[in-house]
Amino acid sequence: MGLINVAIAGSSGRMGRALLEAVAQASDMRLHAALERPGSPFLGRDAGELVGSPNGVRITDDLAAGLKGAQVLIDFTRPEGTLEHLRAAVSLGVNLVIGTTGFTEPQKQAIADAARALGIVMAPNMSVGVNLALKLLDLAARVLNEGYDVEIIEAHHRHKVDAPSGTALRMGEVVAHALGRDLKQCAVYGREGVTGERPADAIGFATVRGGDIVGEHTVIFAGIGERLEITHKASSRATFAQGALRAARFVAGKKSGLFDMQDVLGLR
Ligand SMILES: NC(=O)C1=CN([C@@H]2O[C@H](COP(=O)(O)OP(=O)(O)OC[C@H]3O[C@@H](n4cnc5c(N)ncnc54)[C@H](OP(=O)(O)O)[C@@H]3O)[C@@H](O)[C@H]2O)C=CC1
Ligand SMILES: O=C(O)C1=N[C@H](C(=O)O)C[C@H](O)C1
Image (cartoon, rainbow, N blue to C red; front, side, top):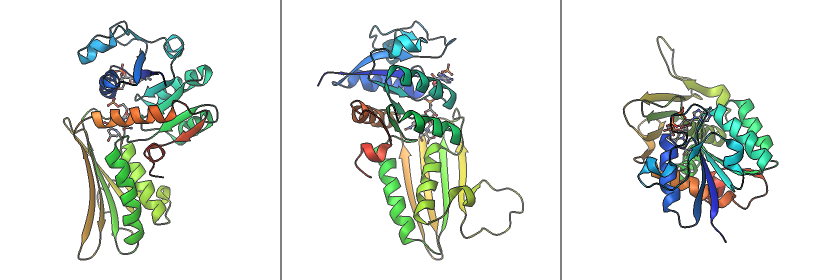
């Protein structure tokens, strides 16, 4: 099989740079295009320069030119950017890996609709550890299904714009599903003042933002006389980038369908 032609959206961002490094080191991939939005100060710069090794690929805001000939677009941007890239990918038949978080329900539906014509992998967390943690959480919730209060705490760097994190929300969905609850009905996003006693079926979320924390998630099952905590700590964005590359390899040959990292990692 030939090299996989990969385009990267948001190429000057934190994840964009981690992806540029990962693609440069991948022997089965070639950087086809590095995209940024109109007005970005990085337009026209050599993308490789951002990670210390020039590669001749100029950062562009021309989606059509950048995506033409690409097999997979990897997108870690913002929901409105992803939706714009999705439209271009549909018209050019380029498969997608979406790592962006913070989508509304209608935006998620637009992505699901596009997956009838494209192969798409979308996951709020591409690390192997978090995806294994999702399986462990399913098991833990099924065993600790009565008398244990579920609370989810996440911590990220000061620049993160969405809360709770996409990963925390997915963890909540997995636990709620295993317990036969609807997260929309039982989620409690922060507490203040005289809150009253905790409802037994609540799934609570707490958010920490500060400094350069890459990403930490803890799910607590608090019972009487004992407490189980399942924690994942990311210490480098390379783990997300490597996961995104695994997703790109998985989706490169797909005709259509919406997948997540459980599919990519064979954890379904
Ligand atoms: N699934 C996973 O494993 C992970 C997911 N994420 C998610 O990825 C996303 C990006 O995170 P991070 O790299 O830290 O963010 P950054 O802000 O560092 O990077 C975002 C990039 O996207 C660009 N961008 C912003 N808005 C648009 C738009 N409307 N159209 C096109 N490009 C746009 C930014 O350009 P500019 O600088 O000009 O605004 C920037 O280059 C977040 O949603 C985050 O939660 C992060 C890590 C792991
Ligand atoms: O914004 C980030 O940085 C991260 N976002 C993802 C999320 O919202 O879950 C994943 C990771 O924790 C880093």
